[in-house]
Amino acid sequence: QMEEQFKTLIVLSHYLETGRFRQFWDEAAKSRHIVEAVPGFEQAIQDYAIHVLSLTYQKIPRTVLAEVCF
Image 1: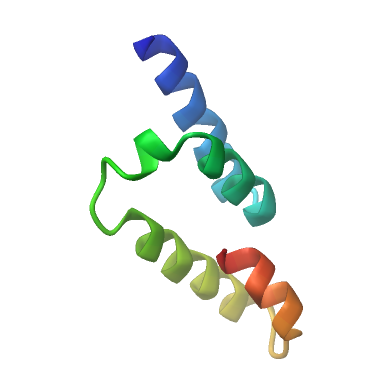
Image 2: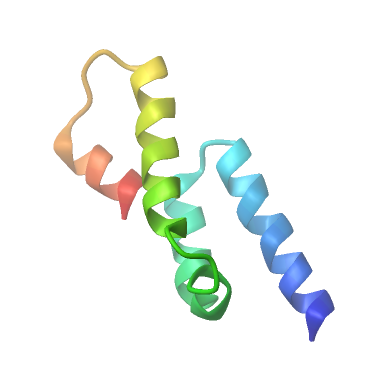
């Protein structure tokens, strides 16, 4: 069971590192027990996504921002 959790964490980190935030949130939704184990985890990921977007874009549609952060 622990091996499966590590695999999930590796997949989640890959999605973050490659900027695939929509896939990250989809996978995180399937693994709520892992995400909820770390206080402030979701907020930290949202902050990271916003930071990455701010480095990349000057303007971004709200729909894209919403997709990346939730």
